[in-house]
Image 1 (tube, rainbow, N blue to C red):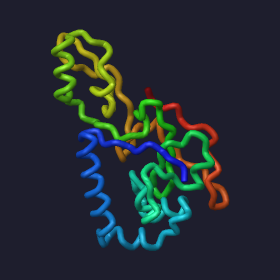
Image 2: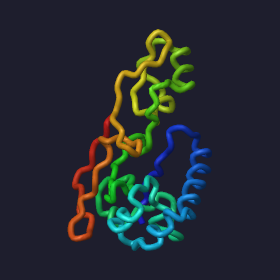
Image 3: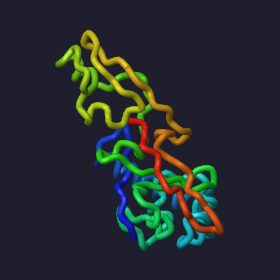
Image 4: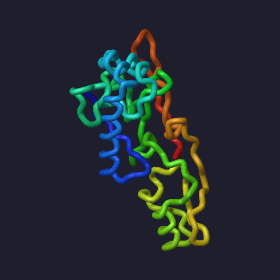
Length: 189
Protein backbone atom coordinates (compact mmCIF):
# COMPACT_ATOMS: atom_id res chain seq x y z
CA UNK A 1 0.00 0.00 0.00
CA UNK A 2 1.19 3.50 -0.80
CA UNK A 3 1.00 6.17 1.92
CA UNK A 4 -0.69 9.50 1.21
CA UNK A 5 -1.32 12.51 3.40
CA UNK A 6 -4.74 12.76 5.06
CA UNK A 7 -7.04 15.57 3.95
CA UNK A 8 -8.18 18.11 6.51
CA UNK A 9 -11.34 19.92 7.37
CA UNK A 10 -11.28 23.73 7.17
CA UNK A 11 -13.38 24.57 10.19
CA UNK A 12 -11.94 22.42 12.94
CA UNK A 13 -8.81 21.69 14.88
CA UNK A 14 -7.02 18.43 14.09
CA UNK A 15 -8.47 16.63 17.15
CA UNK A 16 -11.99 17.84 16.44
CA UNK A 17 -11.55 16.89 12.80
CA UNK A 18 -10.55 13.33 13.74
CA UNK A 19 -13.51 12.98 16.12
CA UNK A 20 -15.88 14.38 13.48
CA UNK A 21 -14.46 12.13 10.78
CA UNK A 22 -14.83 9.08 13.01
CA UNK A 23 -18.46 9.98 13.66
CA UNK A 24 -19.10 10.61 9.95
CA UNK A 25 -17.50 7.32 8.92
CA UNK A 26 -19.47 5.47 11.58
CA UNK A 27 -22.71 7.11 10.49
CA UNK A 28 -21.94 6.38 6.84
CA UNK A 29 -21.11 2.75 7.55
CA UNK A 30 -24.31 2.05 9.49
CA UNK A 31 -26.63 4.14 7.33
CA UNK A 32 -29.12 1.89 5.51
CA UNK A 33 -28.78 4.11 2.42
CA UNK A 34 -25.04 3.45 2.29
CA UNK A 35 -24.86 -0.17 3.47
CA UNK A 36 -25.76 -1.77 0.14
CA UNK A 37 -23.19 -0.04 -2.11
CA UNK A 38 -20.31 -0.52 0.33
CA UNK A 39 -21.20 -4.20 0.83
CA UNK A 40 -21.36 -5.03 -2.89
CA UNK A 41 -18.21 -3.28 -4.08
CA UNK A 42 -15.04 -5.15 -5.05
CA UNK A 43 -12.67 -3.42 -2.62
CA UNK A 44 -9.64 -4.36 -4.70
CA UNK A 45 -10.90 -2.30 -7.65
CA UNK A 46 -10.84 1.48 -7.25
CA UNK A 47 -12.80 1.98 -10.49
CA UNK A 48 -15.70 -0.21 -9.31
CA UNK A 49 -15.52 1.32 -5.84
CA UNK A 50 -15.86 4.88 -7.12
CA UNK A 51 -19.07 3.96 -8.94
CA UNK A 52 -20.87 2.44 -5.93
CA UNK A 53 -20.88 5.25 -3.35
CA UNK A 54 -20.94 8.07 -5.90
CA UNK A 55 -19.39 10.76 -3.70
CA UNK A 56 -16.80 9.78 -1.09
CA UNK A 57 -14.32 12.43 0.02
CA UNK A 58 -12.35 10.25 2.44
CA UNK A 59 -12.56 6.80 0.84
CA UNK A 60 -9.74 4.96 2.61
CA UNK A 61 -11.69 3.17 5.35
CA UNK A 62 -14.57 2.27 3.06
CA UNK A 63 -12.26 1.00 0.32
CA UNK A 64 -9.90 -1.06 2.49
CA UNK A 65 -12.32 -2.06 5.24
CA UNK A 66 -10.48 -3.86 8.06
CA UNK A 67 -7.20 -3.70 6.08
CA UNK A 68 -7.16 0.12 6.24
CA UNK A 69 -4.06 1.91 7.52
CA UNK A 70 -3.75 5.69 7.69
CA UNK A 71 -2.77 7.13 4.32
CA UNK A 72 -3.16 3.89 2.36
CA UNK A 73 -3.85 4.20 -1.37
CA UNK A 74 -5.12 1.51 -3.76
CA UNK A 75 -2.50 -0.32 -5.84
CA UNK A 76 -4.19 0.89 -9.02
CA UNK A 77 -3.37 4.48 -8.01
CA UNK A 78 0.12 3.80 -6.66
CA UNK A 79 1.27 3.45 -10.28
CA UNK A 80 0.51 7.13 -10.87
CA UNK A 81 3.43 9.36 -10.00
CA UNK A 82 2.66 12.06 -7.45
CA UNK A 83 -0.88 11.11 -6.41
CA UNK A 84 -1.36 12.29 -2.84
CA UNK A 85 -5.14 12.00 -2.48
CA UNK A 86 -8.02 10.23 -4.21
CA UNK A 87 -11.77 10.26 -3.90
CA UNK A 88 -14.93 9.19 -5.68
CA UNK A 89 -17.20 11.82 -7.23
CA UNK A 90 -19.83 11.58 -9.95
CA UNK A 91 -19.10 7.83 -10.27
CA UNK A 92 -15.46 8.56 -11.22
CA UNK A 93 -12.09 8.28 -9.53
CA UNK A 94 -10.50 11.70 -8.94
CA UNK A 95 -6.84 12.22 -8.03
CA UNK A 96 -4.82 15.12 -6.64
CA UNK A 97 -1.10 15.72 -6.35
CA UNK A 98 -0.69 17.79 -3.20
CA UNK A 99 1.61 20.73 -2.59
CA UNK A 100 4.48 20.43 -0.14
CA UNK A 101 2.41 22.12 2.55
CA UNK A 102 -0.64 19.90 2.01
CA UNK A 103 -2.78 22.79 0.80
CA UNK A 104 -4.06 21.73 -2.62
CA UNK A 105 -6.10 18.59 -1.97
CA UNK A 106 -7.89 19.44 1.28
CA UNK A 107 -11.39 20.82 1.66
CA UNK A 108 -11.62 24.60 1.80
CA UNK A 109 -13.69 27.13 3.67
CA UNK A 110 -15.75 29.08 1.13
CA UNK A 111 -16.87 31.70 3.65
CA UNK A 112 -16.13 35.29 2.69
CA UNK A 113 -16.38 36.24 6.35
CA UNK A 114 -12.89 36.54 7.84
CA UNK A 115 -12.09 34.20 10.71
CA UNK A 116 -11.20 35.50 14.15
CA UNK A 117 -7.57 34.55 13.60
CA UNK A 118 -7.50 36.67 10.41
CA UNK A 119 -9.08 39.59 12.26
CA UNK A 120 -6.49 39.30 15.03
CA UNK A 121 -3.61 39.11 12.53
CA UNK A 122 -4.81 42.27 10.77
CA UNK A 123 -5.32 44.03 14.08
CA UNK A 124 -1.71 43.19 15.00
CA UNK A 125 -0.29 44.14 11.56
CA UNK A 126 -2.82 46.45 9.80
CA UNK A 127 -1.11 46.44 6.38
CA UNK A 128 0.18 42.85 6.25
CA UNK A 129 0.54 41.42 2.76
CA UNK A 130 1.86 38.08 4.00
CA UNK A 131 -0.42 36.29 6.41
CA UNK A 132 0.73 33.21 8.30
CA UNK A 133 0.03 29.85 6.66
CA UNK A 134 -2.08 28.75 9.63
CA UNK A 135 -4.32 31.78 9.16
CA UNK A 136 -5.18 31.07 5.53
CA UNK A 137 -4.47 27.37 4.84
CA UNK A 138 -8.06 26.13 4.61
CA UNK A 139 -9.53 29.19 2.93
CA UNK A 140 -10.70 29.30 -0.67
CA UNK A 141 -9.24 32.81 -0.78
CA UNK A 142 -5.98 34.68 -0.40
CA UNK A 143 -6.35 37.36 2.26
CA UNK A 144 -4.37 40.52 3.02
CA UNK A 145 -4.75 43.24 5.62
CA UNK A 146 -5.79 46.74 4.59
CA UNK A 147 -6.37 49.35 7.25
CA UNK A 148 -6.43 46.68 9.93
CA UNK A 149 -9.19 44.64 8.23
CA UNK A 150 -8.89 41.33 6.33
CA UNK A 151 -9.74 41.64 2.63
CA UNK A 152 -9.91 39.02 -0.10
CA UNK A 153 -7.37 39.61 -2.87
CA UNK A 154 -7.74 36.34 -4.80
CA UNK A 155 -10.38 33.63 -4.94
CA UNK A 156 -10.02 30.05 -6.14
CA UNK A 157 -12.98 28.13 -7.59
CA UNK A 158 -14.15 25.11 -5.61
CA UNK A 159 -15.96 22.09 -6.96
CA UNK A 160 -19.31 21.08 -5.48
CA UNK A 161 -17.53 19.02 -2.80
CA UNK A 162 -15.52 22.04 -1.55
CA UNK A 163 -12.01 21.41 -2.91
CA UNK A 164 -9.95 23.44 -5.38
CA UNK A 165 -11.21 22.64 -8.89
CA UNK A 166 -7.72 23.24 -10.28
CA UNK A 167 -6.14 20.59 -8.03
CA UNK A 168 -8.25 17.55 -8.86
CA UNK A 169 -8.52 15.65 -12.13
CA UNK A 170 -10.39 12.50 -13.11
CA UNK A 171 -8.24 9.39 -13.36
CA UNK A 172 -7.89 8.05 -16.88
CA UNK A 173 -9.51 4.60 -17.07
CA UNK A 174 -8.87 2.17 -19.91
CA UNK A 175 -9.96 -1.45 -19.97
CA UNK A 176 -11.06 -1.20 -16.33
CA UNK A 177 -7.60 -0.08 -15.20
CA UNK A 178 -6.22 3.28 -14.14
CA UNK A 179 -3.64 4.45 -16.69
CA UNK A 180 -3.42 8.18 -15.97
CA UNK A 181 -3.23 11.06 -15.72
CA UNK A 182 0.40 11.23 -16.73
CA UNK A 183 0.61 14.73 -15.22
CA UNK A 184 -1.29 16.02 -12.22
CA UNK A 185 -2.60 19.59 -12.02
CA UNK A 186 -0.18 22.04 -10.42
CA UNK A 187 -2.84 23.41 -8.09
CA UNK A 188 -4.13 26.92 -7.79
CA UNK A 189 -1.59 28.58 -5.51
